[in-house]
Length: 129
Image (cartoon, rainbow, N blue to C red; front, side, top):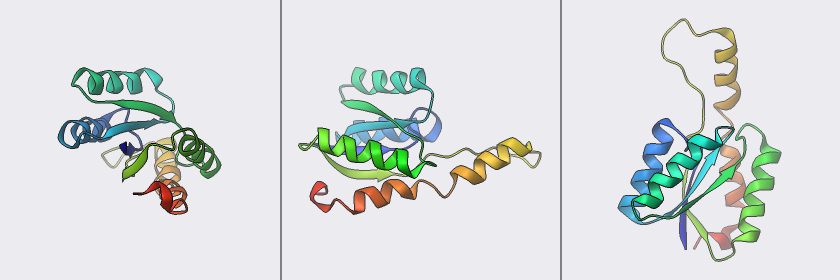
């Protein structure tokens, strides 16, 4: 089964990408989220209600060990599924020039980290068919 993994898919642009990839390409959608299980389930319900398939996969992209553990574990549990599409969308961003220091810190902390997903997938070429 061909899958798309979208990091940060529980809301915003990530959720829109997840819905569209399911609808336009019939991919099984892996909805990555960090903490908002309710929002992630809402997107999964929308995908399923529109005739698609998907599942949730919780991990924090800024934590490489968490990414490694969860992606490798998912691949081991799902040998019949292949991640054909990876959308590194996760991140925190705020518009405007008056960003509070805590928001700025979280934005900087998260921004370069999605590449951990790419590195895990790159070392398992048999999963990419």
